Image (cartoon, rainbow, N blue to C red; front, top):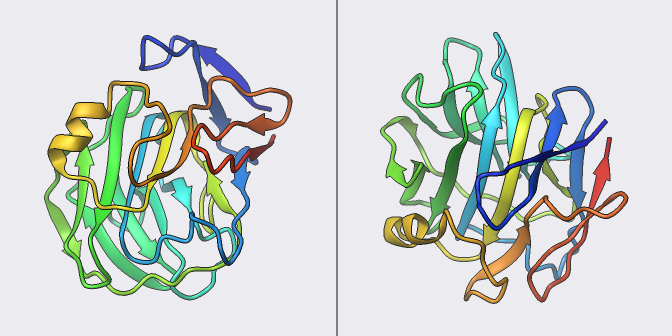
Length: 220
């Protein structure tokens, strides 16, 4: 069951969304003409406060609601010999993951992934700080018309809080990420194609604050 939790990371917000690590997710529809089909140029951002358990994967933002070739997933990896790392993958392909123990369970952290082309460069940031990769092997992502999920994916379920999910069709710079990660956006920023604050949900809906108006559906 979803819970709105008071006192999110941004002073202007009043709450964030709690995911139970079982079946909670926000599903966002994608069509063939959707601005959420990003190709290979993107920035994915969110504030997270995870509860990281042993041998677990925690999808944050995923276009792998169906595990088709080239579909991407941005997640926490805490299994298979990797500990509390940020990880980007596609179906049966590992694209990037950070060194171990870059994340802290039970603490708010801002996470971001940027990619400039199918061959890179790609970067992961935590709290605006560029992270060191253990693996960095970019390959082409492929657009698809399956839903984008927040808090769920092909493997694993997110356990903890998620706030301020932003999807950009541009590779943001470190300075841009640092300059905006602690601010609410207007929704009209250039390149921003999806923005779910996750603090204003009405019923089973999560509002998109861009002009694309791609409403997410809460599935508790």
